[in-house]
Length: 494
Image (cartoon, rainbow, N blue to C red):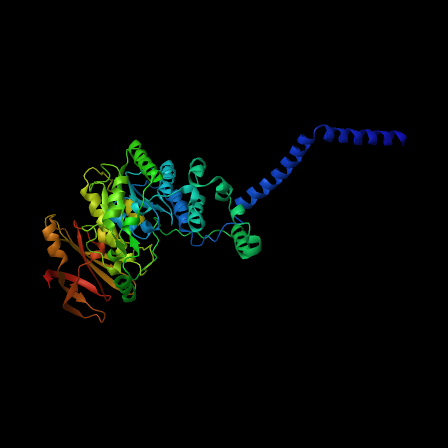
């Protein structure tokens, strides 16, 4: 018994002696153990996504997830970079089907050129496009380390959606102040208050880990449709009474903007990628002194990229042609977006711009069966491509064998409840385009109507400004379900 007590005393003396002799080491060991436990908990909750925000409408995350999935089997031909002005202002399906290529939008709301640059770096790790398009609304003077509240939240959202660790590491000190590093990397730290304020979201996140994710396989290329109707009379009255909410003379540049704009240019040139800049418009009465804004932006974008060959400016006088109040979101706030129809007008202006630049050599995948299968019956496909010969629902009623004929194709699209006619024309020059687009086409045909009667009838088909460019013109109209047995004649009418 005495021996046991002696050993116990010796052991106690040994422990006391070790901690007394090495207090700093002892504290370090204890701190390390506690830190390891906390880090393990942090990494576990982060991997499970327990403190993730509600990502139901997180379009930035969806874009990056889809980009990685899409590029597993498909190369990117056109990559478009920007913020919400871009993903509401360009329709990538129509862009792709018009040009016969694969285009994809990487954009996050409230972001700037510095985010565009790092998004470009990550995107290039996966696929190297032939063409990069940078929308200019994000090209403005910023101080990245000084982001506050809403702006900071937007940067977090885009940062968290990106996946490449090396690119994220290199971007962290250039976007965030040192105090925001941990919040940029960990939702669990940024949203730990959910424990007290939003536990329902934690429960939803836990449920997501138990249930298989619903995989929506519908083709998605980065577009987000937000606004369907244009500017109302009440908003027009505000423009008249209060003036423009955006003052172009307040636009400012700085060294950060200059630096990252040049970085984007350098990366594209190093990778042999064509680069163009795109300015999507706001309503003409929404912006005052745009000439000043443009002149300052012109000083940021170096030659030759500031020339009309590399910069499509749709806010400028010539580029703005065709847009109206119906093209823009009904808002008097500073940040105004485009409607769905407005985005189509902008998309086909971009199509024209790309086609007119002989230096831009994009692959034409229109005859590739895999590409056709990917885009078949998607937005803009039949306006820009011919239905398959064995398709019973989408019929070619007429197709010219002569490439010089003005009318090249007539298509009937059969949906469940309504049908649609598309008459395609190929103007040879600007004058012919103006003529064709100013007229309605009258199709005379023999049809079998809904009652089974065979009759001769006329169908007026108006010009479709939303699916036309200066190089191809579509006339489109909806019709009741009928069977067109024979096309007799097509003529222009006032």
